[in-house]
Image (cartoon, rainbow, N blue to C red; front, side):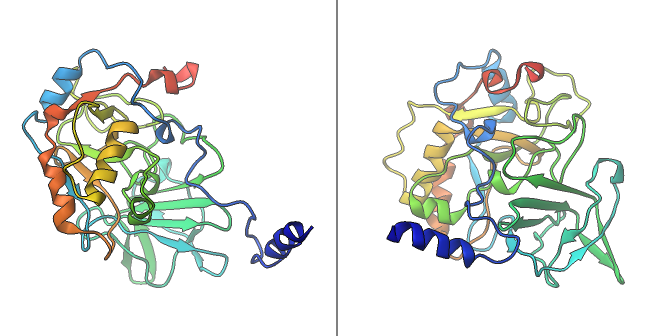
Length: 293
């Protein structure tokens, strides 16, 4: 009885519009939240890995000062409309934008907004201001309680039409000892086409040796991780179990995360000991709905 009363009291204490259930970054059924360590190796894996560089080291594109930041928002956060360069493929809704949103440094200028109370995710690409106007290249909204993705052929704040935040290496997960999702990776050259749950391509190349948007890569099970520092080891273990997903064009083997003062930069740089030859492409078609295989 006491446990029931405590639960009821907790629900009553929630702010208006909030949910009693925790807001996860997509259900466990979402393909990028599922393990790939037991899936078959993709035919053509060697060529795909070679195109990204067999001797190229993994680069953690995050740390104490680098990465794509995100922030939580709520019902008191002002909602604003934006003008989009790619309006036909953007969600033209009101975005919860703090007065001083955390904007990624560099050319892409991503803004990631996590509304935990409503369990929604809002993401912007190339956010900027022009006087009183708010502008962005593209924008996307997701219901985090659903595995439903964007319409086929639509971009998002990322080239693959995927969400960004659920695919970042985030320090709180590493502190708990386990990352339970795929990690975002970039490739210098990609080919035309995409794999579910990616929805968009960013290349006209037809070379089958190149990865597609949504391509899954995993660190081979034979790679020994025991010599890595703890934070790097947790990230590398996720690469073995959940793999990497190609989500944008960029430098080869750059793995994305969110910045945090708690990262050990020197330890993370040890991930560079992992080379492209330590990875293989995965046939993840079994994780897609029948109509998407």
